[in-house]
Length: 286
Image (cartoon, rainbow, N blue to C red; front, side, top):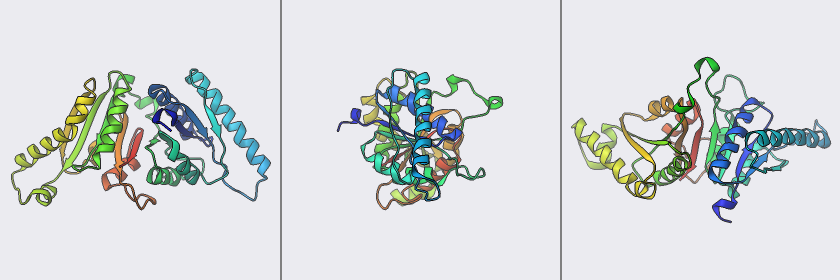
């Protein structure tokens, strides 16, 4: 199965968050030239008749298909209703998907939580990139469409950044006029770990800039049409990424493969960004 055969999966549960995720997934499928599969997992519940669950699931999927027909009539989405817990179903389906898109919280989530357990579980365990769509700004705080043109990627100074950069460049290239901001946080402590004692802040900042240049050189050659801004940030990159997410089309962070469970594999920067972001966040397994 080639990457073009792997669809974008949109998870729906009837919540406003999942409707936003469906809209985002439909537009992204069109941009990437991929198919769209709409999934509603029917959580096993002995208190409710299976026929009732099946009927409600089908009604939700039918509404979702009609919504996609209005947003992106060129798509012909398929639908699935696995009888399983949402995180388990989506993790399984991610093995044959290009992208899984979920809302930040579902119907069962506590309103006080910024990120639901299903969203975190899928982002932690999926085999492909996962986009968690956080609710956008209210009408009073709305920003112009032009402001949502940046793709923002948080990278570390090691091989784990390759997957993040690949996904970020591909995403930027699929959006005409998009700018890619690549953020790397550095500290005096991390510089001492990697290269011995260094006490010149300017020298450490210059070293971080060189590291970013080396990380991105090959990708710039492959995607010359993408405008790139490199941003070495003194201190943690979390604040920069969260702030940027408010006006970014997408913020991209990495997740190390292996030993997947809730939150594991996500760096502190990645988990903070995913939890507190003000816009869509992609978590890329590296």
